[in-house]
Image (cartoon, rainbow, N blue to C red; front, side):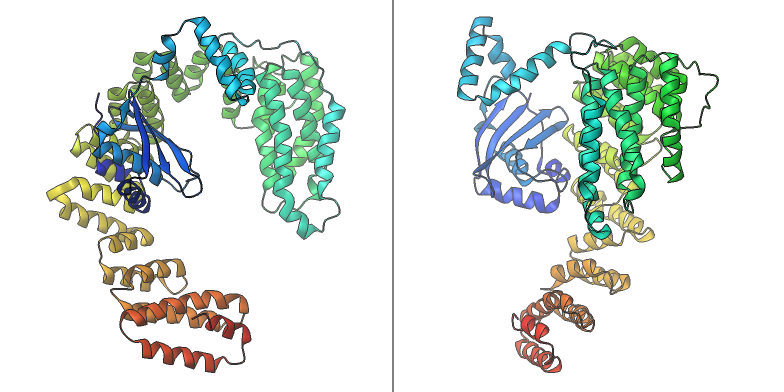
Length: 576
């Protein structure tokens, strides 16, 4: 199958600056060692902080299903290396050598040959041995149900964890309050590692061990809560993050009524004290102890009001972990967790059941997107497309759904549905990327559509996007008007526009930059002088661009004379 990928599709999946840089890499032949394994493209691209980056791009009938690059890019859309590889495929598909995929290669080997190959691989790369040690048991475990309460080989010591937690809490002693404030994040991260260790016990089937860790964590940290400045809510957020794992642990531990009652009485005053500090989402822990798995309450205990969904989520996580699939599906339907039900049926390969329930129950566009992605990943792209198209008519923001659906429709040759998807995305959240995608697709209809899109941005508070569009369209004066209306304080917007219009409207750049620079100098604080000089540098460029070097030099000399008694400013001005 030769998947249709176009430059327009690739642009819609990338930020403009990334696409431009990726195109430059492609033109400079920076992509090499390209290959194709079925629908998987692989290759390498020359890098700036590494000799090369490894790239893989998975294709399907909808275009690019997913892409990965070893570079650290994380600013949105595909990185320039992925763009370069895909452009190489668009323009020179025959340069991608056909290779068998890994399943085909290994499928031709018998067990003994495969064993010898693995031994050779480990000999060449010893790190693989450590990976195999964890991967083999995990792969075996996936085929076996996890018992709800497995026998522990080692008893978890409460005193050991208590000392560890106290050591973390005491790590900020000796620091002034102002110093400790900036170190709170590090301390909370360490407490999070203790919490995560409890999750590992729970995943291994040792709920009793996890319960010891989590209850000790809750008790010890709550006892020290008032000793810290939690202005940023980092410690409060940590407590909130304890609720779900502790509820899961309680429900997994098969506690009898006596054990539940004892633990309830131990934790209730702690949770109520935290509630007095505004941490109100821990009552589900008490509810789990009071009700247990079956919901049968302990009569003498108070049943606090709480968000029932956390209890449902905990039960679903437990059933998932223990491979109790039928009970999982029944609970989903019973509690109205239809998205979880649908995704589980897709995972099980029961696509008709999943699609039937999806069409009947999904009411939000973001839920339709989640299910559509799962169907596409499972190889059911036509069903994914139909559901995504239905999602455009559901409630909620359509932005993410539209930008996901648009390139797929385009790859299918469905231009009008692609336009509808992008337009729905734009109406939910305007952006230059979606605007350019619509321009690329709409052809003769563009002028009418363009007017509608601009009116949409003008009617809503999307000043930055409107300016981006005006700059993209080289409507310099319109961008300047919007920037002036935004006010002098919006310096990031002013900086963007001055950089863009400098060759075309130097007079405005001089005026705007001078106002910013002189305003900063007037603050009489040396920390602003370097920033002011940056604006003056823009003035200089604008003067030189309009052949007015003499005026610039006169202005600069006047500035130096006026502020001759400010040595810090004079030092900065010398750089000009």
